Image 1 (cartoon, rainbow, N blue to C red):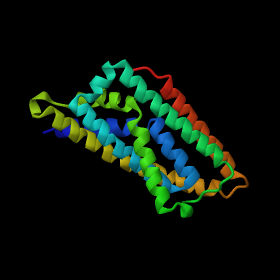
Image 2 (cartoon, one colour):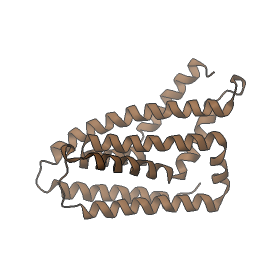
Image 3 (cartoon, helix red, strand yellow):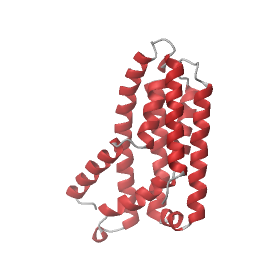
Image 4 (cartoon, rainbow, N blue to C red):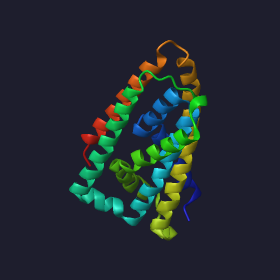
Length: 208
């Protein structure tokens, strides 16, 4: 099994990387501010569920195949970018809508959860990140390497959930105050559309 000291290093590194201002945390922040903590938690849960796909892909070597195949990487990359631009367009259409955490229905929660999964799976850079990050904490003398990578991936997922839930709660609280201001819904949705567009464009122009 994984040594306790190695595991602590892994958790510390994982938390630090999760807190960096990357696409996932910005996505959770924007949803939480505009639609409340419940919406943010649903989105974060979807994003973290998507990590199961990337963990499995890295453990089975599928990520390596995507990395070596320029066509596969490009297809997934542009699919993710188009999806994010679509979400930005939807946010602009909602520019006059005022959201609150109370108004988020069960159907909305499920939709946001699915949206998080799709966004995460359609980002090939997450698979490549896991392919590069997880093996650094694997010990070849500790047994089944793919199993160790799966365990590390699940631990990464759990800490990401904890971090994202805290971010959702905090951002949702701030958002509930912002939304009380005149025309706040319009400006927040414009900002959300801008964030989605930036993430999408960054993904579209990214290299392996």
